[in-house]
Amino acid sequence: MSQAAYDYDVIVVGAGNTALLTALRAREQGAKVLVLEISPREKRGGNAYYTTGIYRIVHNGIEDVRDLISSLTEEEQNITIEPYSADDFFRDYSTVTEGFVDPSMTELVVQNSTAAIRWMVKNQGVQMELTSVFIKRINGKLHFVGQTPICAKGGGAGLSDYLFDRVENMDGIDLLYETGASKLLVNEMGRVYGVTTRSDSGLKDYTAKAVILSCGGFEANPEWRARYLGPNWDLAKVRGGAFNMGDGIRMALDIGAQPFGNWSCCHATFVDADAPQPSIREDTDKSAKRMYIFGLILNSNGERFLDEGYDNVDLTYSRYGKTVLDQPGRIAFQVFDAKGYKTVTSGDGFPDMIDAPYTKADTVEELAEKLGLPVEKLAQTITDYNKAANNPGGNNNWYKFTGEPQDMHTEELPLAKSSCAFALDTPPYYAYAVNCGITFTYGGVKTNKKAQVVDSNDRPIGGLYASGEIIGGLFYQNYAGATGQLSGAVFAYIAGKNAAME
Image (cartoon, rainbow, N blue to C red; front, side):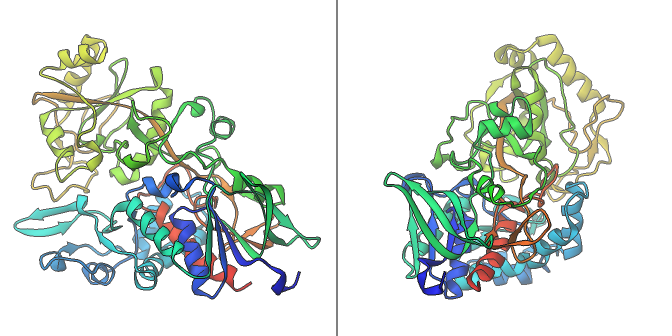
């Protein structure tokens, strides 16, 4: 097919933040772009709309951050931010994924992390701000605690709204809602030259020099979840949109793409037990419950079942959510005393804990009765924990700037709490009921460093690229906080440019 015969230069399947960035990157290279979004306009945005919009990047401290944030106050201009090197990032990424991830893929994300975000800011006008939840005031001076100092203004939802506005008002990009891709068009040479779409108007083919799949994983597909993730996963709550059914993965596999990554695992965190399904778009990320490190997690038998302080929350929250599925009734309770509750609802906590539904009681026994848990068992669990708590020396430094020592651990407790192990001894007591909420899946298709989808022999499939959560091999068993949207931005940066050059 001659170049003049194509409908578009590049077709992007999907319209989450990664997909829109991919389309903008391709347009920047001069490509005429079509974006296909399966959802109606009022439900647009994909999973990205439900995120906090935080990015983990390589940086040298406030000097680099100043370059990315234009709206810092005079005091924030001099905030203390510890540098986060490429070696630090690579180590954290590799450690949480248990060494399974391809080092070359990890290096690609790490080495391009700052460049991709700088491109978003400088070339596309995206506004970033300090991740305020991690800012502490110590001796009158601001300190940033953690490795993720920047986030999109307005979170994932704010970024989504901005990118849609930019795409819809840019010449050279067409955006179709309620139009899903159902099949990749492949010529006799095995090269992709377009897609077949399905909408209320029926089936229609659109052709292009290159197609970029940026339509997420299969987290909204209960049948695939049960098939690949295992029993009870079809009962997990979906934190994001209802449209990520694995269609992009299926289309790619149908033409010989190589399946890749950790198909039996996913990003899943604790969410409100009464979180509605499908998720309410306006609630964005509010259903997540990630501040368990300041309390205990108990099942309906009144027993602990995991180490709440095993590591920093941003390195455990996406792994711990799945543990609820193995508990009686697939429900658990995050319990705090007055001290812990103050922490999780103040500037030290995530805003998702504020105004969330909880149960309150003046005694542990009363709390058990209100929750319908065995009173004696719950009381004994907390008594045993309190006796073992408050021992200096743990492994957590995330909250070291709170003005009080945080490195506390338990001793002589069958199930340890490795850090932030403070006694729950100050009434009243609070409990948040939680379930498992799936965010995105780790299995997908394999790509090379140019974001080209490859076949079973690692040969690029001509004309086919990928960006975002459809790419397998980026996460195994666990996830370092703020690397999901970051890896999406990196592959948008790479795929959009390379596809436009076809």
